[in-house]
Image 1 (spheres, rainbow, N blue to C red):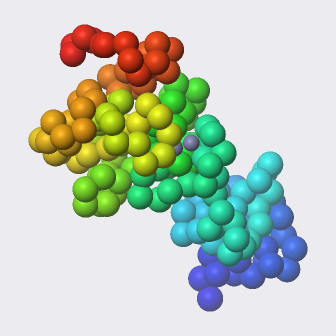
Image 2 (cartoon, rainbow, N blue to C red):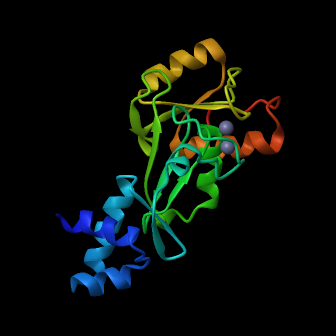
Length: 189
Ligand SMILES: [Zn+2]
Ligand SMILES: [Zn+2]
């Protein structure tokens, strides 16, 4: 049995902290943290207030948006992977861009979302966004993520909105939230 498998067994038996596990295996806390993080990424455990527990089925299905509380739509949402293994999920790119303004940037390790057309996972920082188009599957003003700028531009041709890179999209979203979708923004910030 691998150490990770053994860790799962021990958690099931009532171990709740990294310290207990490190003592049990006689390894460093760093080593245990690495195992726990991998287990968390595999969706087998969750970490809460410094304790570890096994992940239950409902908790996998029922994640809610960190910004507005709606159920997370895995096709549209953002997942922020934070240092220390915490995840911040949002229902759609609208809330994903808003969440960015509230998170400690230094603790963000990665932001994942999906290309609106192909549904392939993409690094949101590298994505192109269409903000404030007339299409609104979730929150408004709406935001859509695309892997390619070309797709974003095609989408904006059909549905309106502003094509922006990640940083610009967070600024535009904030502007639109303040001024309402009717105010015309200049095409270049
Ligand atoms: Zn939301
Ligand atoms: Zn939403």
